[in-house]
Amino acid sequence: MNFVYAFWGTFVGFLIGLPILRGVLRMLGAYVIVEEGTCRVYVLFGKVLGVLDEPGFYCLWTHFGAAGFLVNWFGSCQVLDRRLDQVYLRSQPVNTEEGAPMGVGIWYEMAISEPVSYLFKNADPRGSLSANVSNAAVRCLSNMPLQEMLETRHRMSQMVRDEVSPKSNEWGYRLGSTYIRKVHFRDRGMIQQIEAKVVNRLRQVTSAIKQDGANQVNIITSTADRQAAIAFAQAAAVRPLVVGKALQDIAADPEIVNALFDILETQKLIDGDARILLVPPGNELLWTQLLRGLPAAERPVEGATAHEAVTQSGATVRRTLDFSR
Image (cartoon, rainbow, N blue to C red; front, top):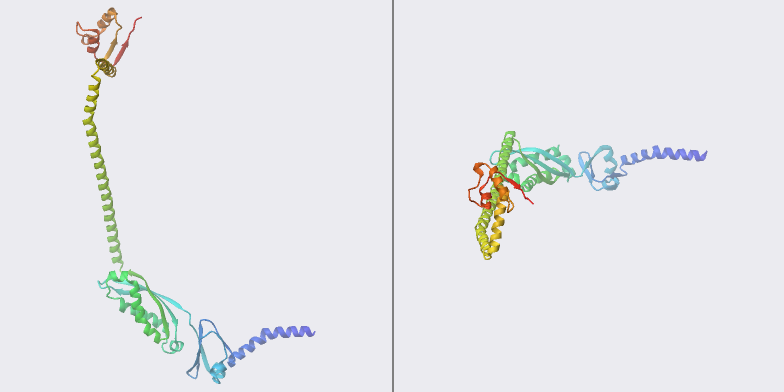
């Protein structure tokens, strides 16, 4: 039974009694825990009693003396988040030197630097900082040349940060990195005009590239044709010389010349459209019968030899081979 009583007593004590004891000690100011990234501002009777801005375990009695017993009863404690925060302001209206309506997107970081100034110098320091950044963008970036506004975002960011930082420090806010993330046109009609100009310019550039390519191809083609024509003309000019020299060398031997011309004549007869009648030697009777069978227009001249008669009888391509044994 003693073990059961001890068990239930310990269980109830740790479950209920310990949290009640810790709450009483915190109300009396015996201890307080400051978490990482936060700070506590204690105010007693309208005055700032102290600020605890380092994370850890603190005893209010040792820090504030006798006031540490009363601050939780008659005073107040403000817990502030000192972690870095980020805000993005979209499309802040500014005008360029040329009068073009532009929109600027500003991204900036902020954190609480002076908790007391943050609480008591401005009723809405976060909203005031956003308004100050927006106004600084209008004051610093208006009447800038359009080209400079589109190209020098880093310098524009420095101008806005330098303009806002002194005032934000007075309100207990520390302005961190500031950057102009986007610069765009706000007038829809102007955007459409710029898009139309860009499209037309792209079409002109594309047409110029195509025309230049076609011109280059034509130049290459004409150059190749000219060189080919020169080569063919040179070959045509050299051919008679080569053929004449070859014939001159062949003409040195009469037997070769006669054989060559016989072969050429035979080849021409074979390739031509003449009707060839081949009559073996010694068959004059067969030759006479063949001549009688030819039309009058195709008969050879009287007194011609067999070779001359065959040459003179030209008509369609036909070969008649008749060899008698």
